[in-house]
Image 1 (cartoon, one colour):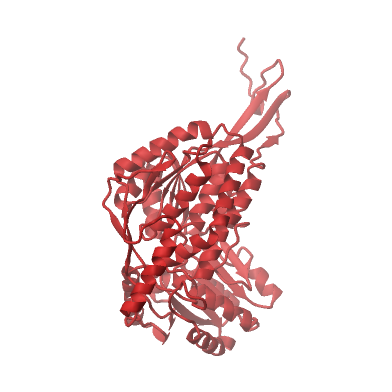
Image 2: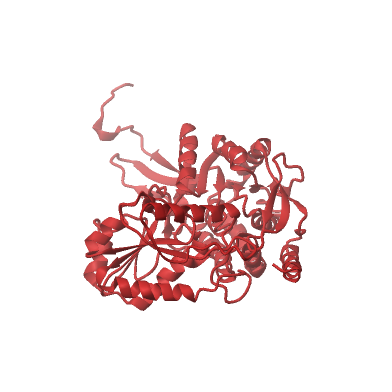
Length: 521
């Protein structure tokens, strides 16, 4: 990268960071609780880098174990008053938060692109997700309803109600640094919970900017202390958060390995967890499919966010009649993908998030080769560029290759050929993960079989839609090793509350259920 281009990039980064009073190359705090940032985090400082250049953006003061405990204590104390605020009033706070993100949408999107490498269109869409989930949560704040159940006992009323749960710990990933944690905090807040948020160490500046918006909106209100932020290493901060029995619920997004740690730690103290973990998502294209639709969906599903989505299309299952033709079209489409600066208009694929991600990409392709996979397109690290850029890769694989069962968090697509829909469904369901899936067909019978009990075993099953691009109106999550939790739409709010069953006797007798007799005066 020439000196001129480096200087131009630094000026651009300085402007983007300046929108949130973050100094380029300076030191900022990644710890906040009680309504303000703390300038003395006890964790080791970390550097956050621009993945397009490898240049340091800032040094971040991080939380240590003691900071985590203090943040939880502050959130636990704030919960005692926040839970008493009427839910519609809590919804009004979330509405103002949504407006805060709406006003800063472009600033936030540019910061996301700068720090995690997502192209601007996708970054804007991510901020829009936060705005959308706030709108959804505001409506739900007036619909946190229980139910009345017919009692078998005379003069008795049997009802259910939902009550605030407590402190919610949110552990989020770099690839959706505000949208996915936003799904959690927007709904948790209207439910009456308070938040301790541990974001990815790859994207601390985005979380700090979001925390600034929280403070601006809630300062001087009854919600002033409901948000805490603890940027820090998972080994110290994450484990402390998992082990703290004052944290009623952990919402975690990340790898299946992360899910194993979370599940074990939370279960040990009888806590709750909502997990959204690895995806190994497949698209099936049948002979009768609209190939134009399928091509666009597969291209975005594989290349979007440089293959760093939990819903990235990682396996392509083609019926034999169209396999050769479709693969040729996909390779041609890949050749048109502009790889480059995510802040530039027209860029379709930015960099991977870090040098470690590039290493995983290289090692994954090497292992695919060792197991007999054939490289069809790409597979090159763009070493002539600064930053962490790679080509998206297409490989022809076989279902008996062990690596097909793994999630490589990079733009690598396995391609398979099958004869029948049932063979395709079996292949779709053959991996440990079960997040998202898609079938392209014009056959009603094929679509209905795909959506039946013998079809996709994933939490998300689409017809003529790819694996990426979920809307917040539908519950999001997966099955099997993906975790089984649900976030966003539908009745996901129930995961952030506790259910209480109530029996009210308004008569003068005390009949027992099931006709039990116990004649004691």
